[in-house]
Figure 1 (cartoon, helix red, strand yellow):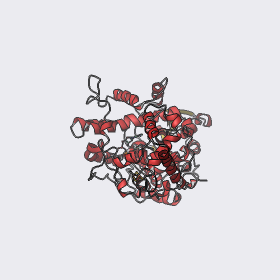
Figure 2 (figure 1 turned 180 degrees about the vertical axis):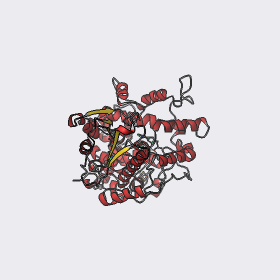
Figure 3 (figure 1 turned 45 degrees about the vertical axis):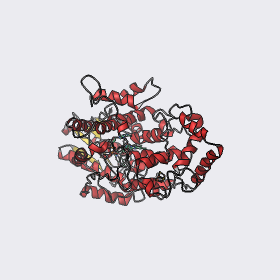
Figure 4 (figure 1 turned 90 degrees about the vertical axis):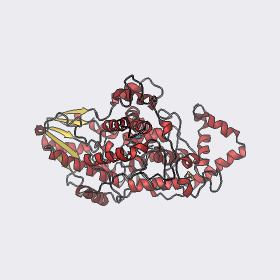
Length: 518
Ligand code: FAD
Ligand code: DLZ
Ligand code: SF4
């Protein structure tokens, strides 16, 4: 009677808590490609190919190291289609004395796992996922009794806990905790960021690409540019390239956007971190070393570390703290359908068209594109959070609900009513014009405020502010905006509102079958 160790698709780590300390001769590792996971939303084709390929490579790596791996492929004849169904079949096959599983990243899957003790006639042990720096319980303790879950406060605790960028006297390295104000350089004339390494699909990856083409041909996105790391070795190479070539300028240009330049100085490591191919803490230690070796400035290194031990850890804690109601939160009562162009990239708005093109071709867009272009539009236009959530979960190769949902519902849409963000990230065309070169190639003009040819973000911004006045004017970080609005005469205000209404009228809602099967 062995121990059965199910490993989920985003748990591809050799020293996962459920493998660590186990002996090879009395352990059966179970990995499952299941229809439910591949279709609970209609994920981007590259995302499914990436996960299946990484799973198959990981299974091979474990077998090479002497582990017994029971691997169920999607097209296996008797595939039950769900994690629980497949564990039930494996229990029949192996008659284990116990099941050891690491808690799932996502609520939906964790709910299913928590039913296993009643379903199966053996002991079931659910272990914490200790690949995160803060446990779910630790975040809960931190969050309890706080009115505001300010990321910065949590981040400082994580700095102290890990000792990253800390001096011996307990003060932050460089004197400041946060160099955010030095992460906002607009793009220069010539950026020439070195391209990230792309990994040529091997036989296993090609099989997965073919499988996805056959089984999920109607899903969003292109498979043509597939170049994601699918093994730990490849992911390490991708990290090496980032630390050798891009981290230096990562900080200053973190918020810059350049048309057609999809990666800039970003690490492009989120898919590997989320799958378990790279250890986030180890990456932070490498970044810190780059600073200590004088190879990267503090604003780059602190910025990178903040994204990982700050934001990434924070959103994961926030997710478990706020679920399940975060999924249905809609504090701003946004009801408009997602516009069709989110799936087709067919819009005259050059910024949105480029971000959606990158999303379709690479299953990726960088943070400020997700936040200030795609997210800002959804916020201002009042798109219903459920449709926006589905879209983000579908389209990005790094998307898992625990990280997607807080970013979408709370960060971009303010649907949680301001628990995560102190104010909505609303901006007019001016912001995008400052931080990108998009407007140069756009039909619209960012300096034109209303009427024909005006950048739609401009009237949409005021339409948003006006319709949410009651809630937002109480917020001292937003309140000043209303003094500007109140100084405008009524005709001017009406022009803004009419312009926004006229634009919103032109949006055609998307066919929902892009996101979920009927
Ligand atoms: P870099 O810019 O190099 O940043 C380094 C790392 O920091 C990332 O790899 C990631 O692990 C972490 N990170 C940075 N920002 C965040 C953040 N806001 N939340 C959590 N981790 C962060 N990231 C995901 O991994 N999956 C998602 O589904 C996801 N959805 C997002 C949705 C929206 C609306 C927004 C605004 C952001 C989202 N992010 C998501 C965060 C961020 O956009 C991506 O992590 C990043 O673009 C990945 O590219 P990179 O590895 O080059 O990141
Ligand atoms: C996203 C995904 C997909 C598309 N397919 C699978 C799969 O077939 N098998 C699997 O183990 N995991 C898959 N995943 C990732 C899971 O959805 C992810 O591990 C859980 O959501 C984490 O809770
Ligand atoms: Fe985007 Fe407006 Fe600039 Fe066009 S003018 S690229 S719509 S911000």
